[in-house]
Image 1 (cartoon, rainbow, N blue to C red):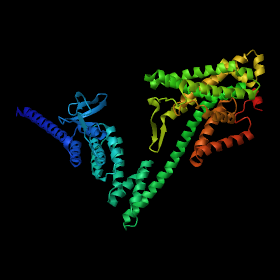
Image 2 (tube, one colour):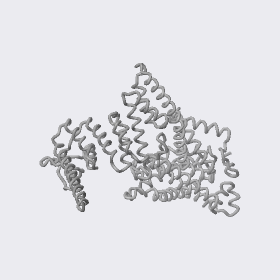
Image 3 (tube, rainbow, N blue to C red):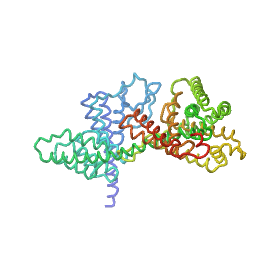
Length: 544
């Protein structure tokens, strides 16, 4: 009895060694057979790799599916590969050791046909249900969900029986219900529909598979169960469609607010300069363009800092566009105050000059501006509602700009002087305010904000010489509709026009929606010439 513990330990070691040798022998047999196997034989070998209870089997299957599993023509050794300038960098499949480089003529890919590619995905998913990582098991369930493979129904049931993670379990049950709809047994179909009925998933994918079930089912085959199943399926689809309409409404609202934030950024600089100086600045769109090109220049000189480029580009674009604005005001526009037609023509000429200058420096073609990784992807609020991170950040950025400007105009000495000049220039001059410098700094501030708008626009549209022209009309519409020189009016007007435009687009199309919005603004101005939030004082006199 004293030697019993030692005997148990020795027996355990022998079993482990035997199991390891068996596993290694099986893997080696598969790898030696793969290079010369025909397609029918490869299916059996793929099955064998799927039964190996180790991630190495899944890794081999993944490499085979991705086309990176090769073998050496002379030795027939199977290898993981990665392309490089010399040909391929090769890695030993079993040990993971780097074996150096081989030329393109020294190796050959283990080929698959379309049927095997589809088959291998199912085997990978089936094997991945046994791995320790819950995210990989969820991904495997999603692959099987899309596979249209009712033969995996039993496999999913077995996985459900042993699964302990609630997230994975929910995904497995959804997949089980999906595969149940593909069954030939009406009772199994009914059980699946019962799951969807109790756990109504407002998900276009679920709607699609139930619609598919309705289409392939024959209501005239005489089966009472099938008839009841079809009634149940139609009720589920109807409920999902009603829920999807609600999420579509939210999606349109988000797109409208996103467009409104862009219109606000484009228009707010124009609202300030127009409100203070009464200048119709046709070169405002080119300030937006300069901000977008400033972003391109930052990324051009700092290619390794793409994720931080916007934080550098924002102040840089503000300084570039603001400086150009001050130069234009001091050099040209200040001599044209009181002559609105000549000011309009002069700023239009400036806009053409700036466009041509950019074409001469950067070329007429659009410049590539990269999106930081943190702006990519979608935020999934619900399976039926995904919001773009990029547009979320632009919306937040627009609100930050609004509150920053509000603080500047309401809480600083410069803001007090700007508001004084905006309301009554003569009285402000009599109180000792240097209205000429206020005009210059205000024009620079408005131009700088337009440059910041260009940074935001560079992330959602092409950066080219004509970028600003697409937003100048919209900017004027927002300013006139909201009320000249009023920040709250500009913000409200931008959001109202943006939301209205996005709600009209599904019914009228993009072009007609813009026309309807323009007609609405014209009719509104006929009733309220000073806009929604009219200023009193000098700004009101200018608009009369």
